[in-house]
Amino acid sequence: MKEIPLPASDGARLKIKNSLRRQSVFWNVAFYLFTALAVVGLIGLVVAVILSEFRKDMGGVLIGALLGGFAGGCVLGTVGALLSARCIRGTDEKRLDFSERCDSPESFYVGEGTLATFAEKELVLHGEERSSKAIRIPYAETKFYSVCVRRAPRERGEWSIVIGLPACYLAKDGGKGSRELVYVQTDDKPRLVDTIAARGLTLLGEKRGDGKGKFTLKAKYYLPIPAKRRRAILIAAVGGAVAIAGVPVAIWLETGIGSILTVLGLVAAGRGMMSFAGGKNAVLVYEEGIFYRPGGIATSEEGGRMFLKWEEIERLSRETVRDADVIKVQCPYGVYHLPAVGDLFEYLKTLHPEKF
Image 1 (tube, one colour):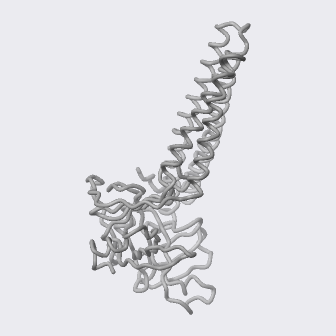
Image 2: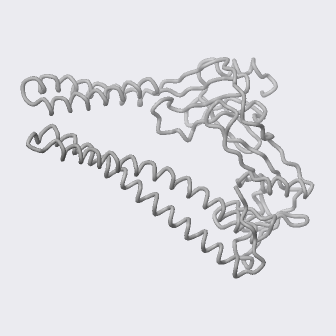
Image 3: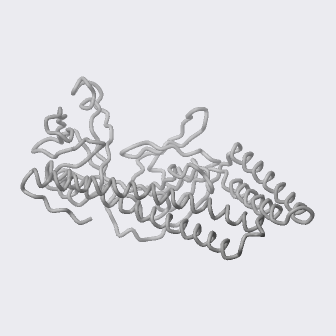
């Protein structure tokens, strides 16, 4: 991301902020408009296909125009929505970075409207307005981690800086109570890394690499999810029945209706079979770490996917959570739970005894 130069006057800075805010609003509106166009185009395309089957009196030119127009709208809307989403991310990154640097070259957002500014001996948390109440935390009581969130077993991932802060400073009593660390996350950017180094602080965690390299799979463990599999079987059965029923309808009643029923039934049956195959939690053990995939294929829990490298795992232990046997994975910046499938716990203990 290319930094926007900082003007000397507050008026010029405010003008740039407003311009970036307007750009962000424009691209958000464009995103929703393009998304609506894609949806309308898709619906219109389906309606045009149905009309071509049932309205034989309609001319071929008209049907072709409808199909082409709706298909074009669907494609244009999809491409436009994707490009708008990219522009939204780029504009928001520039806007937030510019706002940070307007506050201070050593200020960074750690939440909605909250900035962390590196002072001489302490980290200062405050609102966007300098008049807001500030929380001052000595550097000696803070920790900084470089973290890469991976959703797949690969080197590439989403990098961020996680800051550990004593809970007592964030509580209303202001400095009394628990010293347990709570963690806030901010973007991993060179300016932040340079600021941490310039203050003589230690950045713990993983060092950023080139994002290349392959991982070596050692073992696979699966835990079926009965509820998901029952639902998948039901969807597949209904889809199969609809597809079979469409055949006699196409032969003896109406070819168009029968064809549509058969296609819809086959799609539903295929979806059900895929859901059944993916209706299980998966824990894959690699030489480089552990990959957890909840629900496998066709899951709505994609956000739960994670790959943890051995270097970031401090300790593994076994415990019961909500009547389920799980493996607790303790990392410096948080705790994760994996299903204790089969002899997974014993295998991990054999593989890395120093983690127990």
